[in-house]
Amino acid sequence: MVDRSPSAEPLDVRAQRLFASLPYAVRMSTTRQRFPHVLNRIAAEWDVPARFLRLMDELLIDQRGNRQGFPFETVLELTNFRDYYLNEVHVGLRERLAARATGVR
Image (cartoon, rainbow, N blue to C red):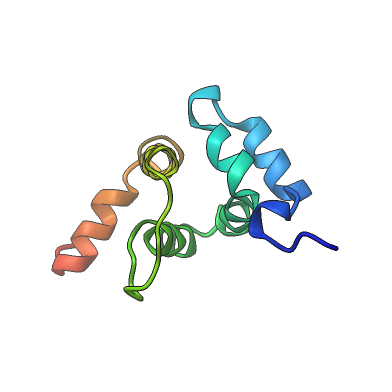
C-alpha cells in the first residue's frame, strides 16, 4: 500500500535549496517534518511576493470553515516565517501593501 498522506510527499529540490539558504531560526523544522508539501508550496511562490503572501494567508486563515488547522508549533513557525519574509527578504513590502490598501501613495 502506498502512503498518499501529505507528509509522505518528499521535499522537492526547490524547497531544499530555499530552506538550506535560510537562517536556522526560520527553517521551520517541525513543519518540514510533518508538512513537507506545505514547504514545497511556499518555495514555489517564494519569488512572487503577492502569491507568497496570498499562500501564507491561505495557510494561516481558514476561509472554508471546515479545516482542522495546523498544530500550534506549525502556526508559530509559519507566522515567524511570514514575518521574516516581510522584514528581511522584502523590506518595506508591508508598508507598500498597507499604503495600496488605503489608497495612499
